[in-house]
Amino acid sequence: MTAGPLAGRDSIGSTGLLLLAAAAAWAWVVGRGRVMGSMPGTMGLDLPAFLPVWTVMSAAMMLPATAPVASLYARTILRHRFARLVAFTVGYLLVWAGAGLPAFALAAVAGRAAGTHAATATATAAVVFAANGVYQLTPLKDRCLARCRSPIGLMLRYASYPGRSRDLRAGVHHGAFCLGCCWSLIALLAAFGLMNLWAMVGLAAVLSAEKLAPAGPVVARIVGVVSLALAIAVVWVPSLAPGLIRSPM
Image (cartoon, rainbow, N blue to C red; front, side, top):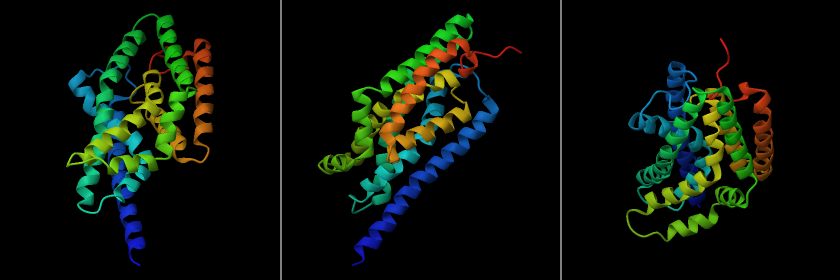
């Protein structure tokens, strides 16, 4: 008779753990953002310095939307729940840390574009917006989003993972679907500025709505259409891409 309440408390504790980690990441990002402002490109960082910053930014933006999946996964764990949930989260974040490599390359390209002719910067912004708009409307986006929204099937798969690496592998697997769902949205930071706090908050809200709201798939398609519109509008209103196009002083 007590299994239900205990499971409920464990679920709340698992969700709280990830939300606490996300809150700590946001606190760090806000503090760092105030110092760095909206610097273009890689923000003056080389790759070893960029990757930790990118990983904390990813944790801040992604963990709140991942908390329900982590909570569901925690219900499949009978012993050492805290340590194993940490391993799941580490595996998840390893995927996003790895995504920092192409993100650094994209940010470097964006930084060079911002420092060259205005037409080059505008064209780069249009490409970034258009890429997100197109991807948001693809079947691959739909598939990855469906797995993130309805992870019951994934839980059955993870339960079959053997050995001590189960939790890390489960986190990596779920992180891969999450990356497949959200990479083009996160790439928009190249246009908005990597440390643009307003853009980060807005994108975090969008990806959370996609994964958690009843109308999440509709939100994804609306965002795709809006992004395509921005790809056109940025040609006439360059300030839509503040991470690439500097306003005249």
